[in-house]
Length: 431
Image 1: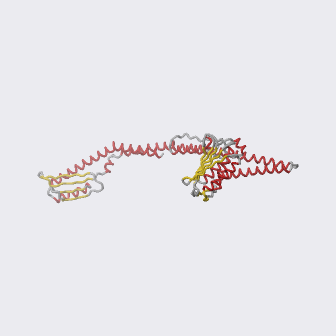
Image 2 (image 1 turned 135 degrees about the horizontal axis):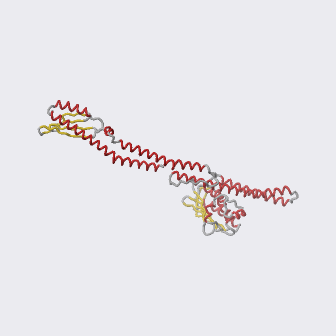
Image 3 (image 1 turned 180 degrees about the horizontal axis):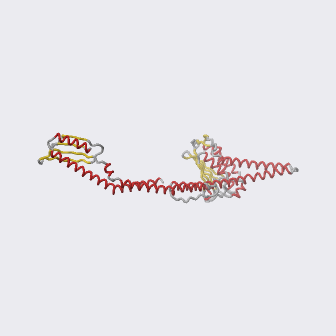
């Protein structure tokens, strides 16, 4: 809109300048030329009078004073040697025409008359010199005003009305917005932003629906088991003590599963996690964590390899508990989804005040197209197998939440044709 108005203003300026140059300036110059002819006649009249009364200084002084006052001009009278004899200045305002005349007697110069006349713009105006440009300006401005109204209606008012009508139809469940506005201006950007906004609303609604379905499924399964075993404990009075303890043990395990799931949901729903960073000797704390995981995984016949490229005295500021939660979720994710026999590799180094963590396994892995989905809540590459392995699809989402809360970044990648890996970067200093 602003660009259009600027272009329209430039067009008007060019038209006005062109019209003035071609027509009005010609008339103005013609009128100025007419005024100059009038001034020449006045000079001739003045010279004739002075020639007749040459030598009568009193008459000349009285005549020229009256003449200068009557015609509102400035007159200087000099002798043949250039000495100023009389000066009469009745000129007011701007002036534009100067003349010099000579009064002769017996072929010799008696007086030099210097006169300055005012070019009266109002007289030029009264002759109609500016009338055409005034009329042309009114026509041009009126035409520009009509174009502006036309442009404003079709390019602003009508699209805004269309936007309002379509926004009223947004329900967040289906993509309904489609603006037939293809200009690359501010309104075009607004239309496209509204379309993207609706797409995000639809996506958010779909994610919410899937999340509720997953939560419903993951809560209903253990609750159904709990209700079933409680019902048997209530209805069957002749149950042996061994079976009672077995049922109670199963109920206790299912309750712990529900508690764990609710804890996981609570973590990912928090916008801000409480992070407590404390100074620790990096190599000592990471070696302790890795050795504990190595021992635990060895009992599961899982090979765990780690490499620490850290100076022995290097101090970092981290929340150890949150970092252990991240690594624990990564290992748990590998155990559930990597397959039967695999190796986990963990490389940690400190570079440019950043902790760089590279975690990967050589298990089954996922496809390239699924890499950008691994941090989505409740997402699982193979849902049927995930249900069987007890996965909720929250582990990597929780990892991402913790890493982001620690002002870090996390990225999923494929280390080779098989396997699954993540790269994590965390600041080693307090920010």
